[in-house]
Length: 479
Image 1 (cartoon, rainbow, N blue to C red):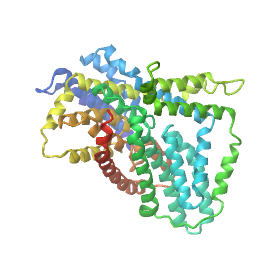
Image 2 (image 1 turned 60 degrees about the vertical axis):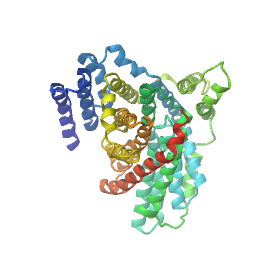
Image 3 (image 1 turned 135 degrees about the horizontal axis):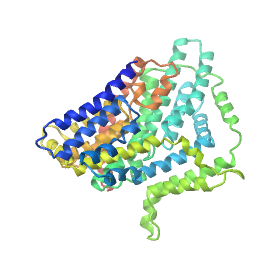
Image 4 (image 1 turned 90 degrees about the horizontal axis):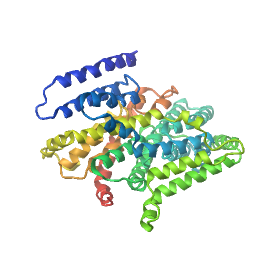
């Protein structure tokens, strides 16, 4: 009921805010910039309250920008077909093929088996498997796949362990570890989570800086691994210490799940080869381009090549690895959200609003670069608890990039830690789909998740800021 009332309030408040802001006198801004602020506030209100589906909110610029004179229909619709939209579409299609032929489940179970069978090793195995898969496929799909396997292990532990308090704690930690690993894992690659692509698109559009697949992995993968192992340590040793002796049956249960898959099928092998080839091209594309001048590779064309192959290669005599009917399961709304975010970011630049923001913060000499980075990272981290992390990044990254430029620094100086932090929402079920999925099991209460999550949120903010302070300068030298 509370959610319904919030949506109703947001539905009304968005257009009201738009009208009031348009009536306000912005003496220092152009009429286009004033109108842009009004539309942006309307979109933020609808995104935060989820008054309408977030993808629908992302379509508002197509309606409002031509009406208010911010941009014409050609300018406002172009970003919805941006190359970064197609890069993520290619990643989605690869993930779809892995899910269709159960390749992702085979990879996950194998990683868990390799980790070991003690309680702590099982938790670590689940985190490693979830984190790895979330680098390549939707963290929602990964969590949904891992949940029934985890539920079987939890049932076994409750049956084997006499201490109900400890078995309950194991259940809580295992479920939270899956959700948190799914959030952390996506940070590692450019296609792992939507905010990463949104950052790359905004920085390319606004400042002409190209962030390639390997470029992002050089900073995203180390941060992802640090957060993954820190989360594991804090969950199992500090926040909810696990002291369960080795129990029989854990490894056997997972082995049985793996055996149910049978031998690797031919479609699985073919999807695996296409996935490996695509990933290798993403990682080595720049090196190939520098070594010759005949062909020019880019991340989007590589993603589309992998996607096209999935529709061309036979799974068997009757069907291909992917059929067009499979695309009904694609998250088309995310792609629309990308387009809306890119349109918003480009308009911030074209109306001169970015320059105004940069000038304002250029005069804030009381804050050092490190202090400003920490403040902005903390703001992003806690905002992402109440709104979509993609919506946050598409609105916030252009602003923080302008702040960095205003302080005579690279636009990536603040944009990168803010983007990293946006994927580290640990406190509430509504913050990310993985959080909501494990909360729905009934094993975890909101206060329990909040108490655990706030510690991890603070750790993530500090780590993101320190991490970027220590290595971002070396990373920026690549561009």
